Length: 163
Length: 163
DNA sequence: TATTGTTATACTCTATAACTATA
DNA sequence: TATAGTTATAGAGTATAACAATA
Image 1: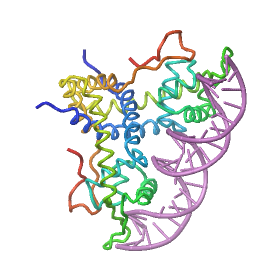
Image 2 (image 1 turned 135 degrees about the horizontal axis):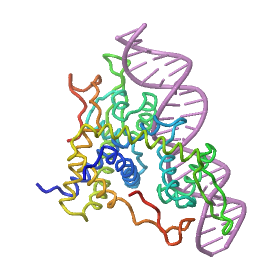
Image 3 (image 1 turned 180 degrees about the vertical axis):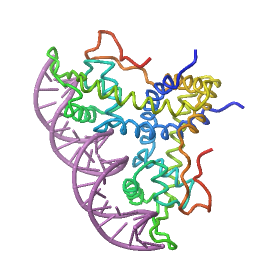
Image 4 (image 1 turned 90 degrees about the vertical axis):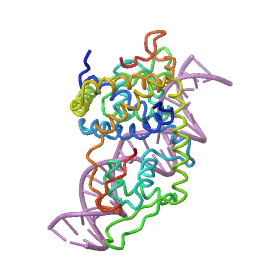
């Protein structure tokens, strides 16, 4: 039988938060001191977009500039990120991962991915295909139009989104 | 080609947090005063499991008892939930939605589901089937064994999980 | 004046540790 | 002693409003 958009929405509303809990717990468990999800995602973004400005991070994470500023404060204090003002426009902030930031992100990501892989290792390859297909559909459906880049990325470039 | 468990994990790690941001934003946008996701999920749980005890909520949300206690504090203060001690074992706390709690949850849920439905209304019915199938697989993969009920639910019952 | 960030303030989220009350 | 919750404390997440600096 044909599922309505509402059926689909209902499933998402129930399952996504549950998965998120598991992922968050794992990310925290596999990093010391613990990375929160916003921190983890900010590091991922900066790893893909070296030299992004603060507003880029805020856009990616759907945060206010204020919230993003505080988030970056914490990352800078933990020596995971550097924050410098752009000489060509001193209102702008240039953000980069430190070596420690790259290492910490990679380690947390690897450990968490391995945990998740363990969870899906028990299902059939067919089911894994189903999950991957659905994630790719959802990725398109949920990602807003990528906002214009106005940071230090290559001119005209957009954010580098995974895969 | 055959996707590895790791491929699957990588997709999940990227897409789930992004979806979660969207869902959270919508839940907040469609409730006044705003419901946070933990509050929203606690109300959903109590709607399905009237008379659950605090530990049940903590288990469902993967929170410590302490965190759950504070969460419920807020819901009680907002008159969304009642909290009473169980006469048969006064260590235990019996939680129930108030009429306002039911109403507020239902309204936020409806509005959010409609938003999500709008997002998936643009894709094909086939793709919606793919999403629903994947969510059901993921629901099984990610839900831990349902913990024993020790609250006020029917004897021997387990938590009522959606669908 | 418009843009980019920061600071002040005020919540909630979440954990650990120490505690109370009950069984 | 073991179980169910609460309180104290602390750092992070997040928003709005007010501000500073730069263009």
